[in-house]
Amino acid sequence: MSWLQTFRVALRALGRNKLRSFLTTLGMVIGVSAVIAMVAIGDGAKARVEASFAAMGSNMLMIMPGSSSSGGARGGFGSMPTLTWDDLRAIQNDVPSVAAAAPVLRTSAQVLSEDQNWSTSVQGTSPEYFRIRNWPVSRGTGMSASDVSSSTKTVVLGQTVADKLFGTGDPVGQQVRIKDVPFQVVGVLAKKGQSPVGQDYDDGVFVPYTAYLSKVQGGLMNYIQGVVAVSATTSDTQRTESQLRALLRDRHRLAGDADDDFSIRNLAEMASAQQEGTATLTRLLASIAAVSLLVGGIGIMNIMLVSVTERTREIGIRMAVGAKQRHILLQFLVEALALSVAGGIIGILLGLGAAWWLASSFGWPVLFRPDVIAIAVGFSGLVGIGFGLYPARKASLLDPIQALRFE
Image 1 (cartoon, rainbow, N blue to C red):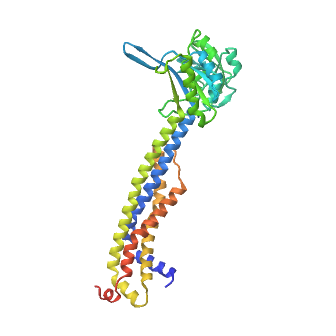
Image 2 (cartoon, rainbow, N blue to C red):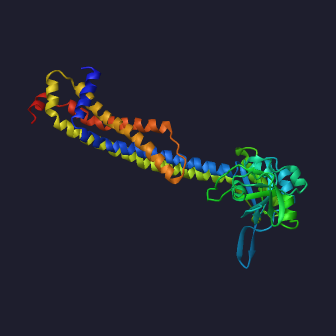
């Protein structure tokens, strides 16, 4: 008997019990679809974490002032001014691995156009800030070094503020008032979206820090609310953090056992921790889903054993007319493999659909990996062969005479 004939006989046998064959494949369908859906959603969540931290700025380090303490109550980082303009210049000039650094001054204020107003965050900074944050300008020219040096009353709007104040119109060249001081809009930043905690990055305006000090703050400040810095490469981020800590401790004359009077936040480490947590959760969910494949394999073995018992007389007749043990073994293996692969194919379709639906519901991106799909289907085939081997071998070892007498 040829392989093609064996395959036809196996499919014909499965076709005689269509409902039972379909129910047998459900275990494989559920297992494959669950694995594909969980991995796709997990990879999508990981991609969203990567995008969120990329929006904050790659290789970025945030340096915050120290914390105040009064009567045993500690105010948290940023409540005590400890970072000076001299510290900023030292960071820019004395740390070789720092590619760029920029000051951050921030307050909340009402921003007014001719006929609209919007309460938002007003930040004073320098042009390096936008390079550190990977934040291009979508319209206009943006902030320049000459704006900083000459304290020009110019402002760059976030996309949310531009929409609220000017709607669909072009804000570039228009004037807005910040604390009753007129500023000219020189650019609108590209839309950046939300942070991992839901903060709208686009809800803010940016002015040269020199204009911020003289026009918005209303006087010079000796201290900075924060500094953002960026290392040359991702691999340098850890070394840059160590160099910044050593520099600031030395400048602030902190003893060896004294706590830092500042805080450095390494976004690369935070992103790595978030991604590792997401990857671990994805592996856990995929492992749990893979158990369904084993359950489906047990179901296939159970049905194949029942099939062997039901078709004992048929097996005896085939052996009597010349079928060999390997033909019987192959026939039942093909049946088990057909059930598992059919379940795998249906599971792929359901898994892709479920992943897309869940991702759309949560607003996550969904990433389909061909390697995971191939592994899931291949594993389902191996499960079918593995769990179908025992019933197939049992069928091939039947005594033809006893099989013919079976009722």
